[in-house]
Image (tube, rainbow, N blue to C red; front, side, top):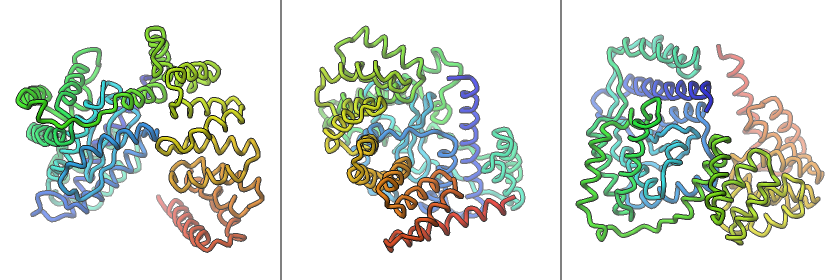
Length: 482
């Protein structure tokens, strides 16, 4: 990763810590001093503010296959929890640093680098259970110290430094320091040794009930520790927020020795699924040059491994070498003839090469197999447009916009398809949504006003008016903001 990007990532991580600290400081000002931790409602409000910063500063991996797999592993653990006051959400941050963390109200993040370092589902389950235990114990919310008197002006200055990003991380740190001095306290968010031990104890219990053992957590902790010892210029983020790793390793090792494997009802672990999502993670989101060398070496070493050819096909697609990518996908299919994911990526290659008939045939053969994937529908729909099958394309795009409203490109091409069909009111409606989601409010208003003139669907009329009102409010705020 370029030095400039590494520096930027470090600054972003500093900002996250600073933001959370200020949010906790703000919470302390307004909430009663008699409470030992914030309420569930306050915790949810805090998490929303924290999420805004995370989503603004970090790139999240939204690959449906990867997210679906992580959610399935998480669901096995959540199923054994006592009743929870909130819904859990899991995210993959596209960052090579070894890190995982939980924020209030059940939002749990794992960095790409840590997931790439894992060898199997057991290790993933170990990290997830530990972070879930932190949320269940509400360790962050219990750490909020009640603030003393602080002026609104100082508070506003801190918030401006954080949320407006004036001057970057340095200004943020300065604002935080001033605010902390004014409050007469320093807020420490890192977990204590006691927090870590409690999360391990409870997390291991959850793992056992979910059908996993502690071996996975032990192995991944050792990898994180070794990252500090071998070939790393800095301490992994995980170790700065999750202390006492040596004590934790010793405790977990003793726990494993004291629990017979017969005590654990084995979970259904899908080794192929883990290998597939890790292959996609490295090929599609890791460093390009590293991924190319990795899969080139693996193909030479394991020429009969279909997943190796699949990974090589993915990275070749990513760099635009469609011809060779198709060769490797077909080689993988020789070992796994009906693998819907390999067929999906081969179909995508056909579309990118302009082979629309082959793309439509390949993607159409798997459209109803496996879990729903918006990308599969998207490239099939675009192939149908190129083949003049507008009705079929529109049906597919409509399904994407309903099931995956964050897949914004679908709104644009749905608008294009409706334009070709002569339904200009529906075309303007979807193009308006597309530009609104992109933040291009002037274009959004143009298309939504056009749609409103001829729209007969009463539900869509209401929705258009609602969007126009929201856009006008956003534009007014942007003009009046200092």
